[in-house]
Image (cartoon, rainbow, N blue to C red; front, side):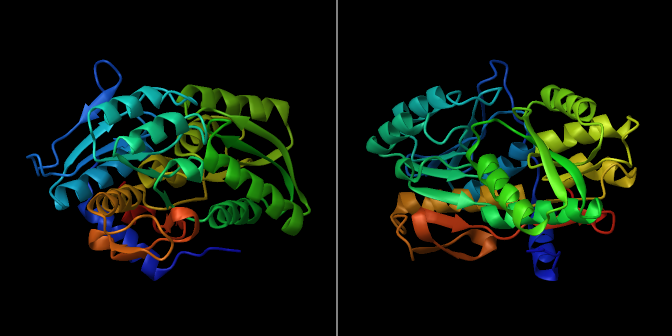
Length: 346
């Protein structure tokens, strides 16, 4: 399946980006960052975002979208999280939020099962739990906001690398954490698609940068050293693709080894303009956070329960319907290249 840029997708992304301001993440104790959603008072819906880690540009943007939504519906917004992604790094933040009586937690999970005990304890205490970007086991959350289907994400990345290397040659994948639910689902689908539709492309390695810039940078160097015939790299993580592009941009492999995957325009703009990267893809992470916040509000208010067929309105994004496994789909990935990247700012 080849996912092409389309006018509807472009307009939808541009509409939100035009009004989206980025929120910085981080704190002196590397554990919390928060802001008042403007609602205030005991009746205001309290929504806490828990990304995989703070200081990640992708989550800076997604959580800013969440904050924007919370301000719109008059709630109180907060963001907490660890400095580094890890299977159980988010547990203490979930426990604290539950103890504080937060109405809703919006989590991008570092592990599908390691968080479940804490999440279920929070739910038992009355906190609604929405996952976004990376899911837990469906049994331990109320709703999952999916940025796009695993098939849609995987296939657009395979399509792009195939186009860029002439549908033949050795490729590798630079992923985030080895336990990341979303990354692993995409990789398995990529493997199946490559085997079925691209017999002349050989996947020679899958490595992990743990969404750490330096580790991803070093992993890129190691891939090129270990595989001298490498023709392309897919990095389905915004930290990984930016670090890989930074390495390639000053190496002899620039222009010889193709790089694609998932990135933000602001991270990748220079690398597209200097020819290091031809094309990459992403949904709008601001939209994803915005949708997750409105879904959390709908759960707290009792407008939806997570049952298939439930529907709610997510502010400027419009109406959404809950699908199977209590999942809400944002939409399809969007391709960014030198012809359109100047139109986006996130």
